Amino acid sequence: MSVHPAIEDFATHEGRLLVGGVPIDRLAARVGSTPFFAYDRRLIEARVGRLRSMLPLSLRLSYAVKANPMPAVVDLLAGLVDGFDISSSRELHTALNAGMSADEISFAGPGKTESELTQAIASGAMIELESTIETRRVTAIGTHLGVRPRVAVRINPDFVLRGSGMRMGGGSQQFGVDAERVPDLLTEIAAAELDLFGFHIFAGSQNLDAGLIADAQRRSVELILRLAENGPAPVRYLNLGGGFGIPYFAKERPLDLAQVGDNLAALVEERVAPHLPQAQVTIELGRYIVGEAGVYITRILDKKLSRGKSYIVVDGGMHHHLPASGNFGQPIRRNYPIAIGNRMGVAASEVLTVVGCLCTPLDVLGDEVALPPCDVGDLVVVFQSGAYGASASPTAFLSHPAPLECLV
Image (cartoon, rainbow, N blue to C red):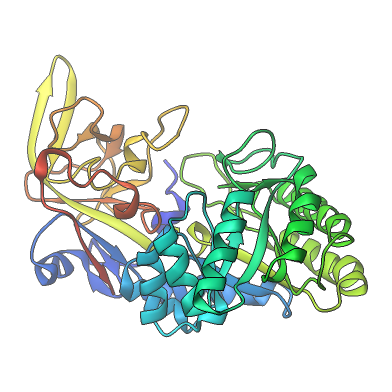
């Protein structure tokens, strides 16, 4: 049976998984209790380095803090990327505390409150406008504060990024302004005291097809070129979103980053630079930067047989890692890569279902997974857990403690 590439990214020593060079049992002792998330600093640095080497040098790389807002991770990335995308006032504070200049922070998302907008505008962060009402609210706050807010228009495109795990654009959406309504909004922005920097399109997430991503980027650029003709100011900011996926499940293949990079280079040189010479092209990534650098570590509490099916019960579960349970928008439940962290290299000889400690049949981390012999006290590791783990899970369910997190 082949080993998932995500597992191969991590080194082992004497049958134990290494995270950040630390054996997993020693790491668990250092953290003090299970379950917990651990993020490998070297893998994050390597991923950003790979992006830098394969994407155009002029491209601005932004990190979507929502993917993993742990302060230590954000602090690390502040020195590696060009900017942060945030979606709440708490993420704004995290970004600013990490030392990122407010000039390099963009605030996107529907339903921004007046308090959040006031804090962001006062700090100097860019507001990505999602509606006419939000535009008027931003204008009023700027007048009250005596500043000219920096803004961009988030566009809901008239096309869909096919092959995405989650569609964020095309058709009817709560995200952004419908492309056909943007010209009217630009007229209103021109009459307001707003400093329009440009546009943002984010069509979809978790896409592994480089050809589809490239096509969406081309269509995004052409749409922005058309809309820019009605703009009240030269385009200085052109955010093409991201959507770069990582392979969670068996048979999924990694994204061909070279193909994406070649397409972006051609777009910048042939379409953006001649027509929008002041525009700084941005790619905004979250999952692709941190997703494969993280693991979720939980300890076996019980092992049982029920009418022919074998279970191991762990001290974690879906309240910490909702995506791994299959309850985060996956139409079909499939297993994340799983291993017994203190028995690496031992041949799989059992088929086990890994369940958490919650009182619900939804609390399944792995259904009928081939694993080596294991027992109470062993450490179960769920890979591809660096993004949307703790931050996207119902941690208050059944009042269990929240998971710990560490950057190693």
